[in-house]
Image 1 (tube, rainbow, N blue to C red):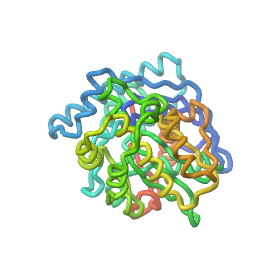
Image 2 (spheres, rainbow, N blue to C red):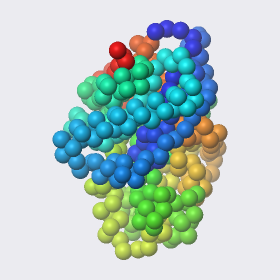
Image 3 (cartoon, rainbow, N blue to C red):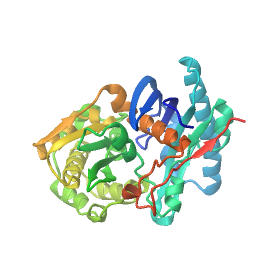
Length: 356
């Protein structure tokens, strides 16, 4: 499917559970140079019922997960169809959907993104490209992160591309290879403690800012084995549930102190993860709105120029890049880099479903 223009809807649901991101995008490719325009974009928040289900799904049985997958596929079908109708989107080449990660255990050769069942194409009556992670796991990779090839193709001007979402991840060029990995949890933990205060999230880090850093807790977090591992490496919610939260729960300190300490931890791990401490750092994801976190990153990286883009790119970059991954799959081109995931080879990942 080689042509110069592609009309795509990118669909993403991240681990921070903000909702389903949808972006209507037009890609133009000439002489291997890619450009894009994000037209309409929207985040559809989860109902309380869905939010609660997704939070506890990591503990579901196989039977429960199978049912959840079917129900979530139906939900995505409804959300995508409504978006197409609302914005009168015509002449789509494909809908490219990540689904929602429930389990991510590359060490066990397993990852599960729900919402990628074949009937999604029939439900929305469109060609669908989805389920981008499974093949990489089968090839011995981490199945993550997948965004870096999009960073290389769409955002080559920046030394570092970083997403601050449920987890932080970074990608950059080193010795003519794209390197990328998950750094640490971010909003999965910050939102967990904001929820305990009756809030969806800590707006701009205003509560974190009023807390005090607990040095013992900070040192305990910084000493975790994951941070000593070499890349490629990736994180799932299991790490938060089994490793991070138990450490926090052993400290009987105010929530604002937990938030402050974890924010400092995130900023420190980002600093340690970057091989050079100057240049340009392009930040997207919901964490870019956390003023206190951005201040702490800048404090630890005084020579780094931090760039935060327009709201459309900031909020919908992952939907944009999964749209690109889908286009690359349609073109039969590489969309996953083994330098990033540790797979046996670069490859073209994803499954294409036809509505018929």
